Picture (cartoon, rainbow, N blue to C red):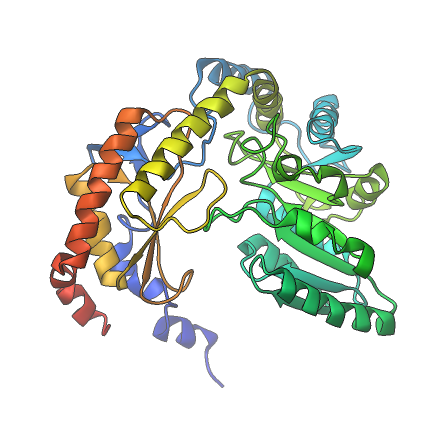
Length: 419
């Protein structure tokens, strides 16, 4: 019999095998200083394009004041216990009511973390006779939630309505046999590609296939729609989303998340979400902070306007310079390049050390081999000077990638890793 740790020692995984070269710089980097458009990385100032603080709320004096006052009044522990037992307060209820109203749903339920909340919500919404149909590019939290499902699940090609309908046909036949139902899961905005989910077209199929739609709108909440209520509002289909999910980790610059739906559905979830029933309630610091942040989303449209001014300037600038940014329809700005993982390391090091640009790097296995994805997250705090400086840097690194400079620089690393 084999010791299970032998496999772990022998095979570190597709990303883990790069740990000795990557850790502390390419992965698990340490940004320092106040959260802003410019921070410190290894003692040098860099323009930061990797902070999910879309509206620039995290370091505003009025936000920090509310956070500090809540910490002083309640400490970090209050309330203790899970919501059902001892962790429920009037402020939790107030936040839920305001969130529901903001996203035009009858009811909402506060979650202590987005990832585990999504996993638990999927688990609670389906029984073993039900069938899940979900976008193949769904976020890891959705994939992990689907893995808990004891029944059948099918993926459809990303944003491909023909593929979706083909799988709905399969799901419908199976549901007629099992006596179950169908849950379709998509994202409002896909966090890597930046594309909006084709919610309007998905919803057009509901009558034919009698499914319910669950939407993860982490990147759409606060950034899309007339009032910032998200992708459903942007596409004019918010009422047809059966269960709406969003986190505070993006536009709200905080911790926590929520589900919104008809009251009957939320009431059911309150009593069946294992990740909330058996975990500590969201601390008051985050609840009071979220109330303030939500108020600013509602009353300060200029924040979203500034965000989109920066988004348009960055994305248009990249396109004018011939960069491939895919088909993003959101703030998420991917830049697609071709190259190996060692080349990607050399390229990103050049960006950070010589151009002062810090952005996220995504490589295989998240995306196909031979592709490099540099993901930029514009915020309301970025300036036109930041954008112009970044565009100049990207033009320079593309030239070095194409003329083989990074290939030569990375040869030793590639040889060491057997690439």
